[in-house]
Length: 438
Image: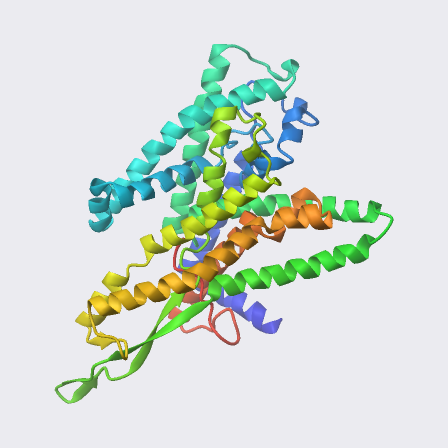
């Protein structure tokens, strides 16, 4: 406890780190405040107990509501959340593989990245043009007529514009956090939305267990132990690496010797981080565009076989896809060759690139399978053990993976600031090996 207090003091001694943390907390507070601002023209009192609240408590809509921190079910100006931007990012990254123009942008460095970010924003607006009116139509279907203080074309048009502006503002908040705060802003916003629902889910689960004639509080304790085990397994997945030994040639410059030592390339078992499950979840929400949010389809049943089968498959596919995008064996082999490095027993150049690619393929397979299993664990928790659906979301799936990934990434950035200024890290032994980005 004493070391923890000392670490907190050290964090706030560093002026830059202190400013970044305060800046991040301020923008997160603005986001949470906006989640409770109801669209103009809607009576906030009429939302409680309405069909909209019931709709947002389960199924795929419930998951979307959790991602938005309850904004969807509140008819908030931030109701559509950040998911349209995530969907647009998926499309742009896919174009980066298939379209030569976007491939050139990826190779242009910072200028190319800015252009791709701009295209992502444009595509986000295009998606919102479809999702905004669909959400307004859903409001008319789920809320009683007396909940609307305004009606007609102007209400629909202004509500759509406000929803569009709300998502763009949330996206801007995320970018500001990334640039001037701590952690990845978009991921932090998603995580904050998830954590905001945790207290309600916990209370609902305790109430359910206390109401049961058998099990009761003992069953709840067992659930918390299982949750802890799953949490540890997810951390092991995120932290796991395969070390590839690299030997650097010995060079003598003047009276000094350089190189000659052995180092390691840490290839992560889950190099894609949390993005595959976010991408897969975003794609699973696309059918909502065509069902007006209220449609009943097989893909809208979060606890159905086909939903979970397709979801797990998409997670595995996106794990390989995102790993291929973020890890380039050819560039790694070229960098090693330029710096006089080589893998013992492997020829430099093309053979090294092929070796790294084969190792990545082998370690990505079990990583993607485990990631897919974790993604569908909430279904087993709910259907097999009778856990409350809200609380079941934290037994795996998107919620747990995002929480683990974002927390480790943020802690890794904080520890980097501490170590740069010669303070002790967050851990007494070992170092956090969080992702450098998402």
